[in-house]
Image (cartoon, rainbow, N blue to C red; front, top):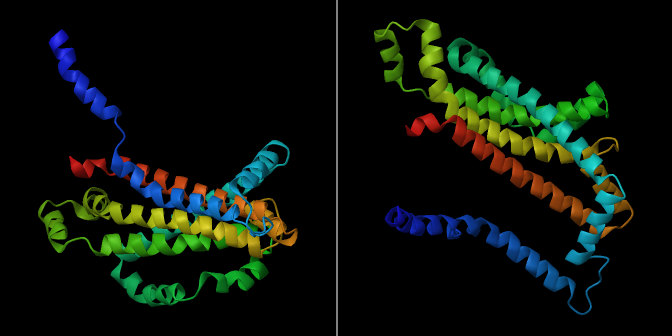
Length: 267
């Protein structure tokens, strides 16, 4: 028993030792914050233009404790998830339909490729006229941002299935539904998840854009507009940090979900 514990102790200690590679992605943001703090305390630097980290932290404390910053953050997240769900579902469904139907791809594909060449923000006047500048317009704009990457990657995931897999399906007499369920969708899943991952990031960026450009409403974009108009640089920088933090969390969650759902590929 003691011998087993003695052998297991080094392995346990190695597991507790921090991995250097896991810290590397955080070195650049940490260095940026240190440079920011150092520059904020340089002589002659106006704190109205470059507030220190302490001032931004004080603004965060005041905003989350006394003001409704949490409500603004949740409002932005709600819009983002609603638009991402609608656009992502429509993009995946359309991409799969194009991938499985060569005729539909020939008829609709060129139009969708032309749509991809139009800047997302060029649709804002049309979206605001169709849906208004309220919640419906914002969610529609976010859904358009999520639609493009899911469409392209889902379409590519099905279109790039090797021809030998289709021949194997014919040999096994799987039929159309069997080929789709047992071969096509599992092969296309990595590309579909790549599209959903990209759509998650694009929809979050579109959320901020919609809140900045449409009518003012609860959300981080509205707080950024207010910080700009009131010349509250600490508030503006705090919103930018919150946006970046949420984007990092989305990225980590998407990677974790992708690894979990596709772990069968490593078996």
